[in-house]
Image (cartoon, rainbow, N blue to C red; front, top):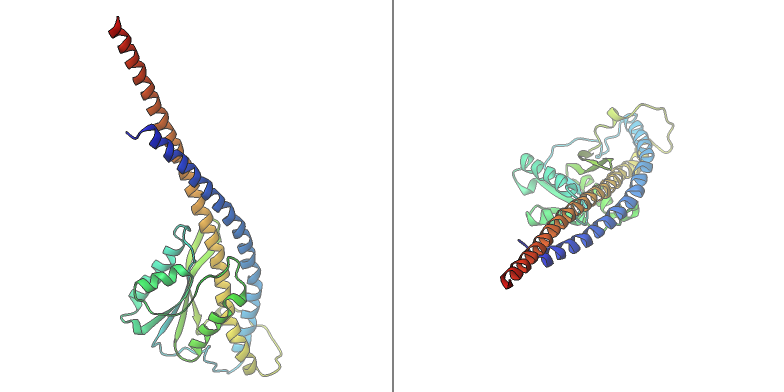
Length: 284
């Protein structure tokens, strides 16, 4: 059995740990509120630009490369993870899904490449010698579009110049504070616009082709930014839940250790009393 001093030390260290996890839980809860607001406020813009792009594309005879499905020689996977851990299964779920998908779809590393957003994902792919074409780390907890504009622009350009023939996104979709679902979304080519959009009549100036040249890259970049906002809300929710569970577990451990400490202390006192009584009897 551990000594009283050892048990007391464990109780004190666990209490300090629980204070840290409780503080992290409260910080994540604060960040979650703002991140959830950011993600939801971006949805109306996403829906409107999708409606406009779809109606222009469906109403024209444009053969813009972003709208045309072509033979697939190389696939790109844009994977959104966090820069830090302590977020439960947030990172492992999406990385496991991507890794399994790659193993099922491809036989050679020449057939695919990764665009990694987040240090955890970048480290995961580097350790397994999976090719990473682009990456970005160190994004703020509440990212602006300017923070990811460069990598979003490069990603879209790599599809436009034929580096990739199709591009998928993987991220955690925010459902609620206790539920985040791993989501696969085909980013490019934009071949499913018609299925998601109701037809609306627009008058255009200049021509539809010229408008699509500007709007289509912006739309694809906005899809990446929208997914990042969604993923950030999921990250804060997952970290808040993980820290709450850690705090609850610490409290339970403190309760168990305190019970053990009291039992050991009672046993030590009983032993001392027994020894004193035995000594007194021996003197008689």
